[in-house]
Image (cartoon, rainbow, N blue to C red; front, top):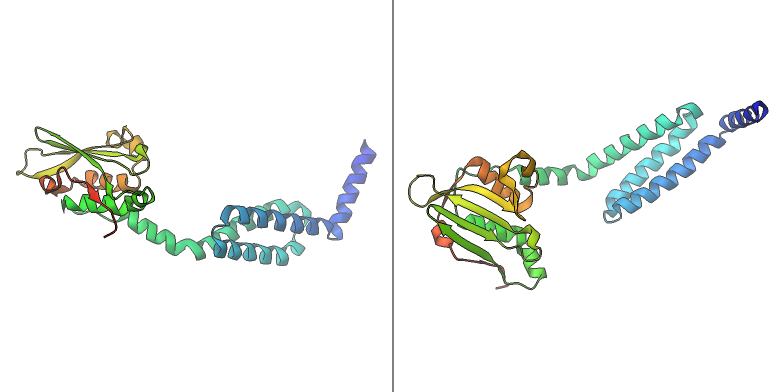
Length: 229
């Protein structure tokens, strides 16, 4: 057994010295990374191409300087570094736009028509894909509350129900009291608030801001027209 161990050790040593190990690592890593990047980012060809070229260039110039005991650490650090580098160059602008859109502030006071306009902006494409000309809304009211259920054109699970209340303020002024998405009470705690994305996230920001909403009576019983004029 000891002889076998010595043979393997000597063989590995020789392969390290003559560059065989480095070449094997380079070939396999380039192949693996090329395949992985292609599969993960094939819909973003310019991004994938830039990432692949950056990784291959770095590997090609660096592996000859790496000894066998160091290669594992080197490879892991290289991949993280180069992926981050290309990601920051290619995606920074898009990420910035997305964050600005998600985190843009909502006003203290808003007209109810803006709620329908936002819904149309988020869901119009889905309505068109289903051949619909309107986004349906279910309305109800009781005492000082108005209830609006926005019905998603494609997926019932994306329906959003919003409860508006007048808390003893001037007539016609409402606040969002509750938001439910797919019967999930988004406003019942921070754990459920993590589901407040997209259109539900917009209404959740109005809820957190306690935005005053005017003109609900003007849109009551309406649907949202999304047809082609």
